[in-house]
Length: 535
Image (cartoon, rainbow, N blue to C red):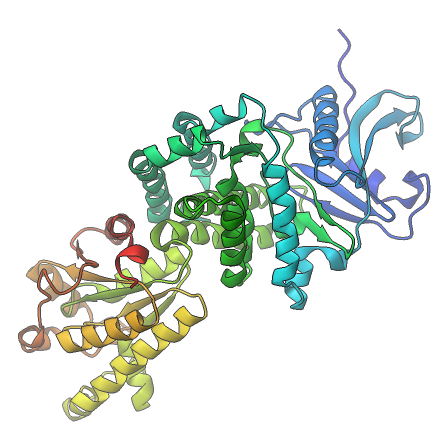
């Protein structure tokens, strides 16, 4: 049996970059690479070529498979954008090189599309500040019409929990090599745990969705850059063709991708708008209970995809580094959905002196991609004192006087509120050993509908004393508290009681930082602070 013809990535890229390769000699050509495709933007047309890869969840490894999935891409996407997809053309091997639709043997295939002007894409409109709710209303109208189409009888089966697990388990396996580089180990384990927890505790809801007609043959990759608007039409393109389990899904999972993309681009208000409008259009209030779970899944998928792209040798180094940065951002966004849902959260890391608050707060802030706001830093900054210099006893007396402490905690509260109003979460790092200061923070957050969790760290006395002793020689310590102060500071610590706050989590800080971080993340997920603390 003769072997199938092949072409190297370098040869294919050189062909696509040469204007003479095209029958109409385009004035300009731009090549865009994803982890699975080469896209040649050569106005007035675009050619999309699938890479010869087998990634498990897709298989483009042979010319025949690439032709099949090119044809599937045209079929699937003509549902929402019929005049964009012109057909499939072969790239053939000729004596003098490659050619589009030549007489020689095909080495691969391309989806041929019309070129769309750049200013109509939603991500461009968002960058330019011109994306409006009216624009998104038009998008929701088109999606709602797609979702009303009678699905095939087999579509609902993709909503079975054992099938949903395939996707999340596959993500975990395919990102295992990225742990410690693109995603923090506690975040990776917390997200695996969150998926398992959700499947167990929301099983009834997931099954109700499956039998209630909420599974559709949808889009599967509903990102801002896959939606193009003109005054005359809405074109939603690039739906997934290579694997039905990514496209046959709950409507909540489809709209969650668009909501996640808006969140990542700094517009949580528009994210909430598209979710609300689709829920209203479908008379589907249960959609709200699922969208954060699916947004978490969507963000994780994007992290995985960018992580894969960052490791492809043929991708230019600058683009690989940009993909690494995006992967980290998406993984952090996934963790935020698991921990806080789609709204800002204030995590207050508190506890006695030497309990490890600052180290733990930094780890949480890094895993979540939130700001770490330290009382020690604010106190010294307000007083104009160098961060890493411990003052004399007289200077410390002034620095830790009641009025200075009041100003410090007022600043902590102000920063947390301001960030929440901008849709951003925050990790506060302070002793919060005074009941009245804890309540003042709660009142300020409660008044604005911002959820919170107090995470109180506990550590054995010997562990606390060892940490304080180590500060004597450490060069980068901001806190002025030392071993000599521990008894006096402990006497001032007002221990929270069991009735003070429903969203108060106690965590042991005797183990390693990563183990404690994982315990805290799991605990906050269980508390569901968005529902528990918001009026």
